[in-house]
Figure 1 (tube, each protein chain N blue to C red):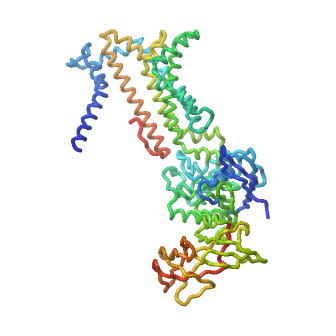
Figure 2 (cartoon, rainbow over the protein chains, first blue to last red):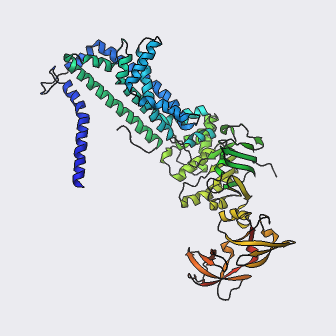
Length: 270
Length: 360
């Protein structure tokens, strides 16, 4: 019994090490004075971060990524709210198969989505632009948003809606006064998930980028130049902390929502 | 009599092929405490939800206060509902919950405030106005749900098994409180319950439902004392049944051959649901006596005690009668000097013809 539990402790230890050690190396090399990414460390510098500040192409790529991620987050969540609401509250003809098709992009290889979207967009005579990437991202993010929001809508006691309606409120106001505040934590979570997925998505962005690269596409392009590597480490460090920050914010909202509504805490991101 | 507050005529409800309600005809009087009683799945909740406007009936009509409710949605009906789960809005305080319906009616702020305070007072939640609703106990949530519905002064208050989530003690307390509240506000209450004791103690009248049909509508006393069918008799309280065969009828009397008891003449009025198809005789355990020493009774029969359940104030005996396989139950009050019999003991069971009911 004891030997078994020790084995599992080691297993979990190694697992976490493999999972997080590379990520921890990012900030280590980001502050390393040498332009070669290897041990031993040679000294402390913030030079690589200041390089980021003056790199115009990087700024454009970052701005593109942010624009796409924000638009994707909003539209995917909006679509997912409608889908989740429809699938959890109403029964209509072909509900299961429709939901199946909507969720399909979650398991479809992204490279297939990328190639087929590319073909379709070119054939239809549209220019590749930030919009084409955004549409691709909405396609792959919406299923994740639906998954999150479905559980939020499912946990909602149906009699709350009925009570509101029974007390004389209209269906429209019932949505805004009762349903929306109660699924708010789910909506915040959905926005953040879609934002994160879109921000670091590479394959679709690479296929549909045209002349305007997103951040991951830019980073990929820079990997050809060894001299750029330390500044990419610095960029990675920034992204790492932004992601952790976003997760913390998301969890704060989730916990606040739970406190406010008194729903049982069923775990979360952290 | 004034017109009924609720009139249901020929109401049917189908879910696909399943008939949840069949030919419901029912008048509920203004100001009465009315209960829909039946086992789960009998259609009582569907009936309540049809009155509230959450279900549309497949056929028949519903009038509230003389007005047809055809096509009138739930938010436009003069009814309010207390839900089984209470459906307290978790993101609002007690006062906000109670004010919800008043705000929907766009009443002036001053009036809302006054009526909310009055309603919170009425259900005994003074000082809880600002309490977050998830920090309330079950009984308090129940009170909030009541206040939230009653503050709108509905013509009818619908209650969907409102006490089933409470523990026994609190449930009994809320039963008398609901009754008191109903008398105080004078609003018609329609209560759905599967608990016959709850229905008996609270209601002016009860409709007993089985399989989507109303079996009997009557006051608690009549329902218990003169159930019209064997089904109702078995559902409400305890009832012993003996096989019976009708021999002849003469004038106001009927001659029956009853299992173990022999040939008897009973007044026709003891066939409470009509004589047609009667095949059993029912008798309540408390209408039978175990005779001690020199005690006598109108009629007597020898029996053997097969089971004794002692409840402190009462003792329930299962006794086996000659020529009947299953034992019947006799309940005795444990008065001073009365000895509790043991299993296997011989007993003389006293009974009277007037306590027998002819049932189908």
